[in-house]
Image (cartoon, rainbow, N blue to C red; front, side, top):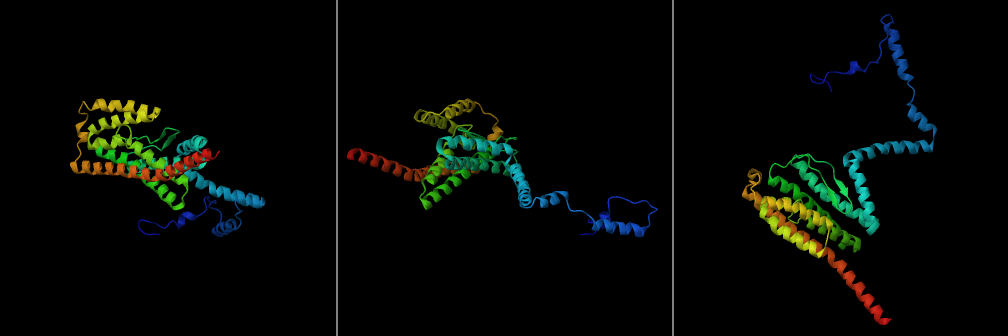
Length: 306
């Protein structure tokens, strides 16, 4: 396209070398045409053609390599490596199919955070997976206020709940128990992250509703710890003590000055998502419990027969 803003660049398509001035114009024109006609094929293609079918396979592989590099650039190499490491670790306990699905559920959860961070213009790193701990995304900037922090916090459980719901629907559609197991794990994973204890997502979300919700959240965390001991939960509760201590002080009041409608909206979203996750976990656990009870009944009847 040419015009005032797009000048004609055809003059720039001349050969990249210049002949001496004493060479006649006719000879210059003929030599240019000759050179154009005698351009040899590209060495790489000529070499691949000589290899026959092997060359075709190599050409195909080289063509796909650029797409692989693009995928690595988008997903970040560190994320891919830690994902594979997490899959290997979980597969040692629960098998490869469940391990792949479980890591993908964690990945979707982290992508919920990443999407909200990008939407709010907060720079962040790529997800990093830690086997038997989970994953995290390092924020390279700070939220403007508690409402933005709550949006980033709720993005992970919201998208994670949707992924678990997809597994639940597939489970009821196919009757395959692995989908129920993945759905149950996905709902539990996001429900645990909704615990209103910082640095969990629930602590970030409830900060904009009322920071005093951290206190009952901490008590719930202690109760969960007594029922099911977890070193990770111990670490979370230790970190949560710092935020509980901060309740005594009015830290950065401007950060928590959020209009009432936004506080109410976030409260509705928080408790609504809690209810959805609890219901989803119950629906996913029902077929698994039924199978467990059936297995127990079969074992009891077999013992009586013997």
